[in-house]
Every structure is written in C-alpha cells, then in structure tokens.
Length: 160
Image (cartoon, rainbow, N blue to C red; front, side, top):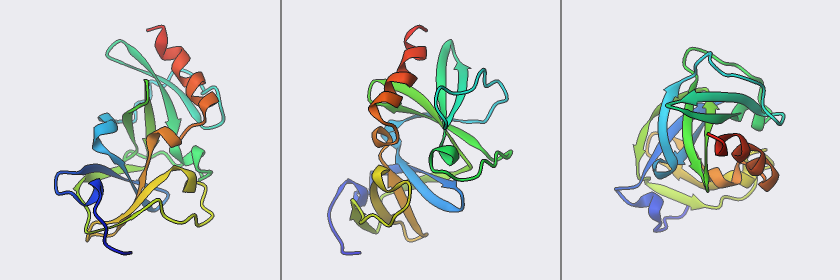
C-alpha cells in the first residue's frame, strides 16, 4: 500500500471494527447509532434473502440485515453476535455481525477503493486500512444494499 492522505489516516477518524466469517471489517463510526447484543426478539423473517426480520428498539421498528447472509457466508449466530444499528442514507437498519472488537482510531496505511479481488463484498468496500494491528476492510453502508432493497427496508420503519 502506498501512503496517502485521507480521512482514514487522520488521528480523529474512528471506525467500528467487527468480525465476519474470520475477516476484519469496519464501518465509519459517524454512521453508527449504537451497538447491541443480538436479541431473540426478532419478529419476522426479512423481505429478501439476507433480511433477518425486525427488532423493536425504543418505539422504533428496525429491519435487520444479516451480513453473513448478505455475503453468502454460513449463518453462525453465537453469544458474541452483535447488531450494529446504522444510518444508511435516510433510514436506520441493524447489521448482524459475528463480533464487535473495538473502536479503532485512524490508520497507518490506506488503500482507497481497493482493487476487486472477486469477493462478494468488493462493491461495498470503501478502503483497506492497516491499523498496525492488522488490515481492516472498511465498508460503505450505503453500498450494502441495492435501491430496491433500501426501499423495501425503509417501508416498515416509516410507519413507526
């Protein structure tokens, strides 16, 4: 990786670091509303293959997206599984991940828009960062879903 200047190398940049199928991913902390344990109160199955129903949080009904299903990984929910509540454009959704490890600060080295490697998450990647504690794939939440999927997710939450 060549050194470049970007928001990812700034000392005040923070991202939520999480695991999914043995890989390290991250999401810009400014998109994250909260992180919570995976509750058994999911109400219904999702409207699309990687949807995992809905969850009620403080009078809001929030749709859930299982990132393992989204990225065609075997579903493996454990006591370490978490829901990362994120704001994607004009709506809020929960992303189910294997484990949240920490909130990381900046990066030592960055590759913006890394070259596709044939992975299912390639279209969602914003950057590849090296934190000094390993490489992390930074996802852009707005690219996790198609426009039709965003519309399908935003409908249930609009009535709350």
